[in-house]
Length: 97
Ligand SMILES: [Zn+2]
Image (cartoon, rainbow, N blue to C red; front, side, top):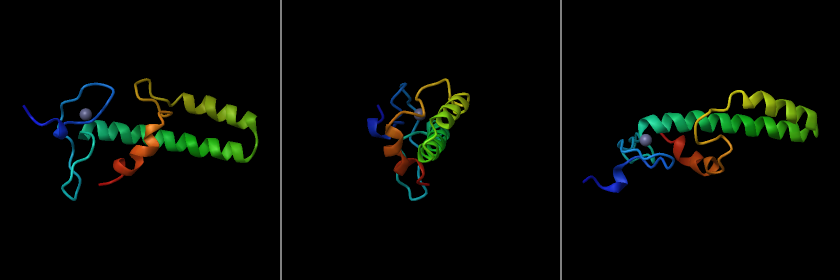
């Protein structure tokens, strides 16, 4: 039985893919598939956050609502959602190569 630590740490569904390897030889938290997926979702999360911040800066709630409506069309139907708060934490891992 392979050690638990070498398997993908994707927490929404069991995934037994091996964790992908960084350029420096250490392991990512996730397998290549889930890392790409997480990256895509994280980018969407960052984009939403940026747009929301812009809207709040302008103190224009109508604009914020419009952005919310617009971005919801791009939200992935699958778990996890771009609102998932752990993405802030995962940032530091996901963009390492
Ligand atoms: Zn995986």
